[in-house]
Length: 342
Image (cartoon, rainbow, N blue to C red):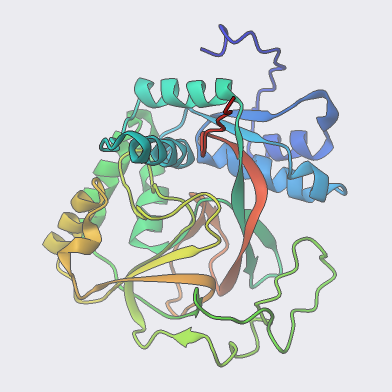
């Protein structure tokens, strides 16, 4: 469909880690109407952070982003398809159905050809070292992050690597100690009273305070401190087949926060992930699975060893916090139709 649409395109190939980030950081963006990534979510993560690295980041991040699935997870591509199908089915009263593989590629190619631009949230993530990342997809600690990173050894299996890694991790289920706090989505707070002073002027995190300070009083402190997983979703799909946050939208301004506490059985955890394929995992009423909507969060691991990922990419292990910035980027997908009446 892209060839039939007769687009003029330049091809840039990333050959190493952070190559795409370096390319985008220094590229002349005026020669393109959009940036389209043919890969998995990791390459798009590099592109987003490359755009935010630029001196002209405010203008650069407005460059529309397209995604053609070419990786193992393809979560954003699946999310874009999900949002489009939900909207279309609301119009014609049909049931939104997931697709994967070549069908997902065709769907994303069609949306790319339509050329409709919609808003995309970015989430600012601040690590304990002072490093700052910009995310569009997810933040994970515990089971999900373990599966993601440990599955790298099975990359030659494609998407099946996640299934194999999941089964292996279920066989040896880990529990992590840590502290979790979040600002509820219905909070009317506009800024943190103490403020977050930093030389970085990009998208000020007005809801956060420095990590060495306690969170503001209107934040919710999670009582449990033993977790099997903590998962903050910013899109609907965790991968092509897992509808983790069915109600999420690309620009809803929300962090969809899930956590599973210690004590859950291996069988129940497996059943929840199977139910996630249809987005019905919350319907099971499992007392160990908690879902909250938030605008900001703080996560402080107490376990000395573990894995954390942002958009499926491993990041330094330690305390971090995050805040959503609503609709500051743009993505190509069919969010709405424009009709003209004569």
